[in-house]
Amino acid sequence: VQLQASGGGLVQAGGSLRLSCAASARTVGRNAMGWFRQAPGEDRVFVAALHWNFGTTYYGNSVKGRFTISGDSAKNTVYLQMSSLKPEDTAVYYCAAVRPFWSGNYYRASAYDSWGQGTLVTVSS
Image 1 (cartoon, rainbow, N blue to C red):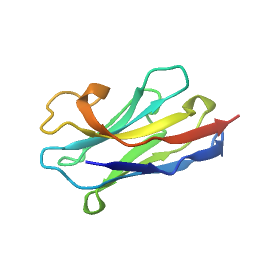
Image 2: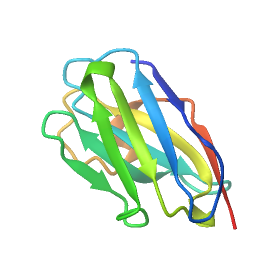
Image 3: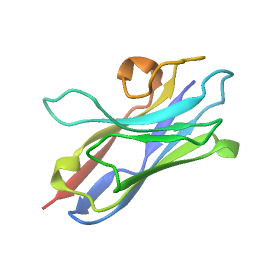
């Protein structure tokens, strides 16, 4: 499956942005999609995930209460609404599709085998 992320940009601290990630198709068994981010010189970090079948959402501790993941199954698209942005949220954000029939947790990058190209989010202080 191919993923296309968009919506990044420059925003002031306290502002909001919405990222989108469109998948080329829904593959049987790919029951979740997620967002990760990677700041310069740092590892890729889990941000959020959405389980398509149950609508269950998962968040990294640093974004709980500020970010919201949602999806439109008809459009094969997931969204990441980011609010109360902080300079430390600055990173390249990647969307990803979970491995088919994955039954583990969704917090690890190894759970995903399809990745979008990334979209840069810069939060100025």
